[in-house]
Length: 145
Ligand SMILES: Nc1ncnc2c1ncn2[C@@H]1O[C@H](COP(=O)(O)OP(=O)(O)O)[C@@H](O)[C@H]1O
Ligand SMILES: [Mg+2]
Image 1 (cartoon, helix red, strand yellow):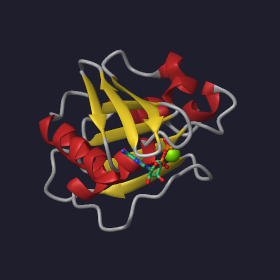
Image 2 (tube, protein in one colour):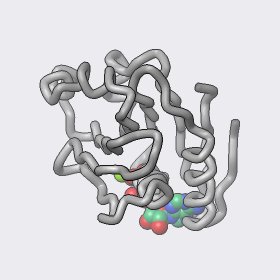
Image 3 (cartoon, protein in one colour):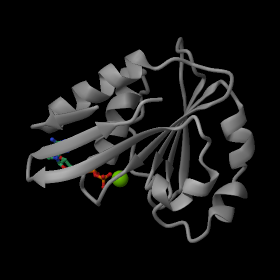
């Protein structure tokens, strides 16, 4: 499904609708976010956090790799926000307990720059690709689950 967002607010609305339609499953739900710098991956992640009632603003975890937010009264207990940009090898994510994190149904996991760790994404991952069209326009392509 290809969507066009004309503003940050529209991207937030798309993210909100996306997360409302998501269902928990037997394992973690993994959402793989790809697209160039400034294409809207973090903006989309922030809007998901807001929609799920996360109080701390979701920040770009570029310097952290992984940040975990507690969720209340949601199908998931934790929102795990990962930025793979600085990872040099998939093994770096594996050493952060990736296999265990993706095995737990209580985790909703957002991975920015997911392409960098594509070999260790579960097959069930939902892929979203962001394209910078112009200063305020982004194309957001969401794969089937
Ligand atoms: N339609 C839009 N959707 C999302 N972000 C937009 C849009 N138009 C402009 N922007 C701006 O683009 C930037 C997106 O940055 P960010 O979400 O950090 O990108 P990424 O995480 O992909 O590097 C923000 O500064 C945001 O304000
Ligand atoms: Mg980002």
